[in-house]
Image (cartoon, rainbow, N blue to C red; front, side):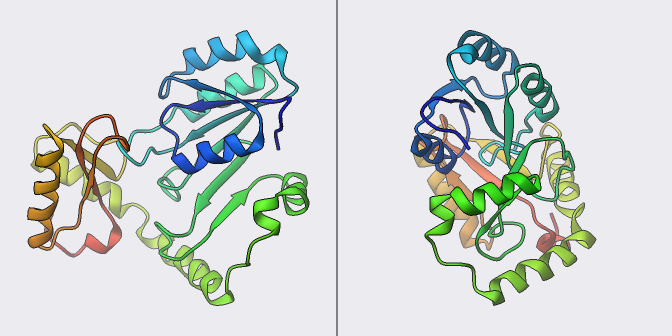
Length: 235
């Protein structure tokens, strides 16, 4: 999609795998402050004329803090500067319904409980990737059983899509926390030791949470991810 004569504008908090992919492309990478459309605009206005093509890379829901990206604002900016937008939906698949970006990528290993990933775009873009994407061409295809499992999960997902967000809101209300933006709720901790001990204590009580600490996140925090599987349990 892009090469050494092109530029990529990437959110500061994009996933490490997305950043690695951007680096492999050979394009010049500029990082904008997290969710900051104005900073992105400053960079694109300064450097756009130096490059043939421009790609804006972001996520719709960020996995560390569960906050939402202003996707529509980035799409509008891209239209003004003849750029493309790629949205990573790994943590937001099925939670948000905006379909205006040029390319959507995601994983089948989170909400779908399967394996692998996907790319959604125009027919011509997909045909281009099928013929030009080295990392796709020279890898093993997903087993049919995995694809069938993911397909079945999508059918089930339609019936349970609203549950994770509802549970997150109920939890935050009980704990007197700000209303969450998504089904991912971060609890900021004082230090790394505290977050690890909290993760262990909750695990002993049958509660699975993720202890996230630097360098993955700037500050230690517990990440609570609410799922439909918790619907029949007490929050």
